Image: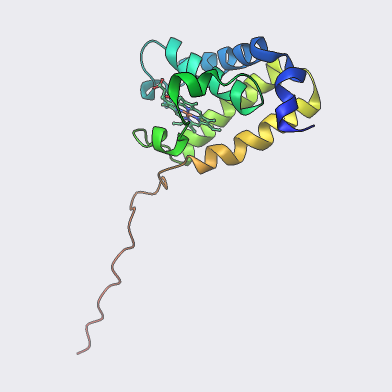
Length: 140
Ligand code: HEM
């Protein structure tokens, strides 16, 4: 199946609404991710729903409302380290399991989400971000 066909075969906009609702149910209880999102999740929910619907071949409402996705840029204000990436994927994988009815749709979605979440990582998660200076050897 081509990615453009997934929108229709998964169930159109109601499918993406259910998927994103299930995802944000997980985020809402996540102590690491919840503080990164605004207190009212309505807009976050709408943007992710419209983005995913568009990505998978649905109407281009996201582009009309938000312009070019520029996802790496839009995630720069938030620290996305390996832990944040993994928590995001845990909630999305659970949502996919719950909402997508066919194995091939579940596989296509996760084959996109896993590398996409890594692409949005903007922090190593390591305590030191730069190279450490090698110790100078004292030759006496
Ligand atoms: C496949 C991976 C991901 C996709 C496709 C994705 C997609 C999106 C989209 C479409 C938006 C809304 C952009 C807009 O303002 O129009 C967004 C916002 C956001 N994303 Fe992601 N994201 C991903 C991974 C992550 C990860 C790993 C984190 C972990 C910290 C994260 C945290 C956020 C936050 C905090 C916002 C802002 C919410 C808001 O202001 O309403 N995202 N993301």
